[in-house]
Image (tube, rainbow, N blue to C red; front, top):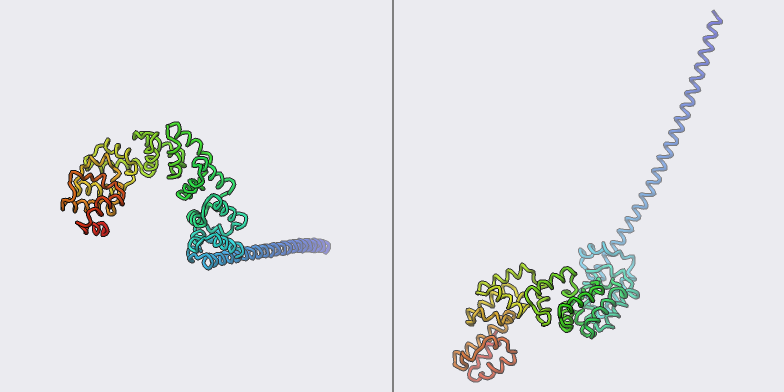
Amino acid sequence: MSSLLHSRRVCLISSLRRNVRDCAFTSSSSVSRIVNLGFLVTRRRTVCSVSQVKSENLEKQTQCLESFTVSYLVDSCGLSLESAKSNSRFVKLVSSKKPDSVLALFKDHGFTTDQITSVIKSFPRVLSLSPEDVISPKLMFFNSIGFSTFDTAKMISSCPKMLSYSLTKRLIPCYDSLKSILVEEENVVKCLKRGYRCFSFKITHCVSPRVSILRELGVPDKSIKWLVQASPFTFFSLERRFNELLNRVCSYGFDPKKAGFVHAMVAFDCTSESTMERKLKLFQRFGWSKEDFVAAIMRFPNCAMVSDEKILYTMEYLVNNIGLQARDIVARPVVLGLSMEKRIKPRNQVISLLLSKGLVKKEDINYFTILKLKSSEFMDKFVLKHQNEMPQLLQTLTSM
């Protein structure tokens, strides 16, 4: 009995010892896990803290740059606060050294304060361009081809982005392409003054094809030169638009060999087909047929660009006040482009006064000829000649 009890006691003690060891092992492992987890958490917090600090520093630096940029745009460039905030998205200024040099360069080349403000407002990134390597060579180029400092300042303030164009790949090739058509430097400068945006077009590849097309149609070189110089945007329009324009002009029956062909190209380039249809309906109110309208367009293509209000005002006055026949205007549509207040009305009043006093005869009066006379010729023939008999004639002209 005592032996049995002893054996049970030994087994119980052994079991208890095993449990204690297992418990100790488990506790040690748990503690280790807890310690490791704590290290990871601590490490993650440290990494997060460093990342957060870097992010906060970057944000502060960005805010600092934005604040400096906005202040500079307002204080040194003349932009409003609202405009400065908006434009600060496109340029970030670290210091005032480079932008100060850019502003000084503009002033040295004759730019006014308003022009400089206009340039910065339209193209703020110009402040980050190198004055010596990028801006100055282009200003010198414009001067070398015949632009005065006034012309250059006016051109740059109107289209400041051209300062970002490559001098060797864009500006010089554009100039050379125009010169190949216009020949004289003076004509090239006139063309560029009319169309500053020519420099923004990649025109070198389309000059020869356009000239070839026009020559094949029979357009003389003289007319081609006029078209390029008078309306470079028409000549350098997109290929599809250019071809459509030629088709429209040809469909009206214009003779390519005559100057009216290129004049029609310019007029039609500014007038859609739907607008032409609307103008036809206006003239039909006065009894014109479609053939009359086409004939008038052929004689005076620019009448397609006369506003609807001007057409109605002029036609009604010529027909109702002067007494001309609407169909007669078809043969002389140029009168539609004359000023009502400066030419048509005052000259009609002078002729009416002379007729009322019998100083001229109605059968000797041709209103179309009178309206086409130069001012000096009209004064000599109808005003100065009769000013002793009717001193109010001069007052009639000066009061208008």
